[in-house]
Image (cartoon, rainbow, N blue to C red; front, side, top):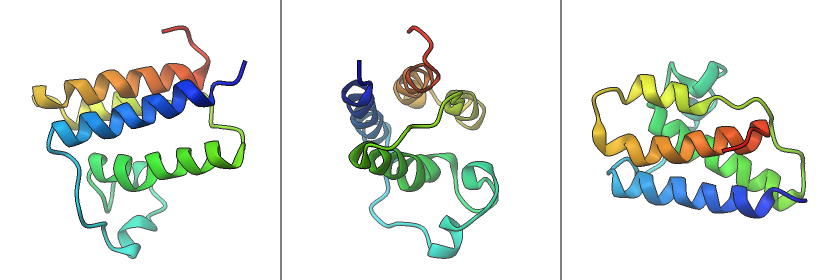
Length: 108
């Protein structure tokens, strides 16, 4: 059974939750910031920027191309660390946990 429909719905839910939490940005970071080789671009981007400008577009492009998606995902723990003490981010974390489970093939 293909997972693309549920994952695409989760990606849309992450975007919606980020907008509701005030984490969505109108202007993209510089191309230099986006080109970081560090995990999550942690040296050049805030975690929410990485989610918006790298994670979501990359996963949507893989889905659109019918390419395999990464497994063993662990975005939620990074979000939990970066957004500790920010309750407005909890709906985003809920969706990131769901995405991690979907990509890792773990039941919800």
